[in-house]
Length: 590
Image 1: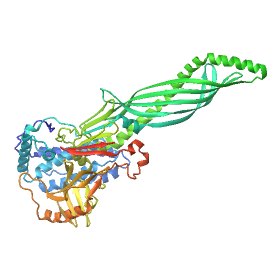
Image 2: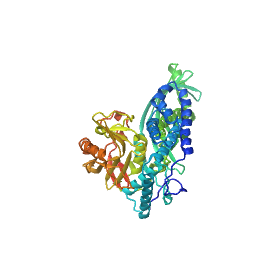
Image 3: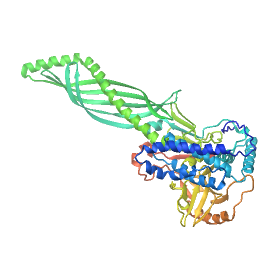
Image 4: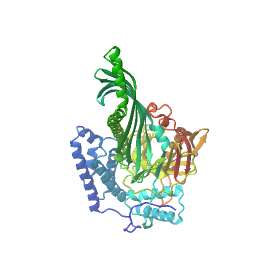
């Protein structure tokens, strides 16, 4: 069985090509203008506002929506060419771009670009009709291979990007397209921290002034706690305070060794909004042993006073331990709360700064993101959508037999997850062919020189097929530039097969990279003269530049600068098993 998620029921004639009216086009431009005014107001409050206006191509944005272009194809094409680089830059990972006004501007630009796509699309009615028929064929056959899922998603994206309705029978539910399960053993090992904290002792116990030094030593760690109300983590500490003190009571000095057992637990909640502390509880149990007693007297009087002091110390030991335990608990509670508050604050800031905000700036917040804790695992699953579009079709999650789950991390990634991530991170970006796999340039106007520069599609830069232990990637450029020549309508196809070489997993190229015509369903796709000439240039370069094998390693290994800051348990993680089938990539880390 397969569940599909697409927009709500279609009421329009699904065989018609819907073109926005003059009023709708004007409303689209007005939406961009209003969003621009709102963003401009925020930029006025920034000291670097003018620099941001320059970076975000503010003048081009104003020109793109300044005039009423109607349905003049030349002006509309020019407007789209101005809007798309702005849309790409608005999705950069810069602080501030996650604000609502910039999100609204991205949404308004995208909607207006979709309107322009609908007006400018050549053979739009024929292509839409052919794609809908193909979607209906896939639904009727109901054999959802990885390739069928990928193709169906491509049709959904194409129709959505051109403001066209989907087949009525395409509405249903969906699966999550990313799941991860982290074992409690690994969480404990990765978070276990040894603590040694010297301290001074200044107390008054049963009327005796106590002064000395102490050292708190112990271990702190995290572990998941079974819960029906979302993910719960227990931040635990277990240790001991060893003290060496002197009690002053008049002419008597009592020398003691103290041992105080300390235990603390803070309950934490983890969800898609971050980490927060729910409660804190601590316990302290003190016990002291008298080492010696001295007085200010000498001779017979000294012996008598010491004997009396020793008897009184023994009589008051239980009371002294209770009082010491109470005060130690108060002191430990304050320190434990401060420590956990700071760690939760740091963890939450890291969660937001490194994960949530970058996703928010790219409009990639998951449509559903659930965290669940069980006794032995911490689990998360998400439906990771594309930017402002419905979730992709996702096949039933596969249950892979990939070994021991008690001491590592299990991850399931659907091909649609990769496509949707690529849309937010790589859409509209440019990449030199000789540097494929390296950092993506954030400027879509890079000069090619003698190299080949691929400028990726703004809304669908990648289409993936994961099946039969092979990862196939279709790179979808909107433009390829080399030696002053430009062309579009091409797809670059690269395939790698997962295999094991001894104890190392790697990707080995399973076929020569190819350049193919952009898929078309209303007529047979073919390369024109420009595309054929570009293929002659690109395919040999891909063959020469793309590595034959790629080791599957973790980013913090192999001499990474962050290596020393990574916990030992994380540094020791290795990819133990990799399986690819039915649209899913399964990774087992041990």
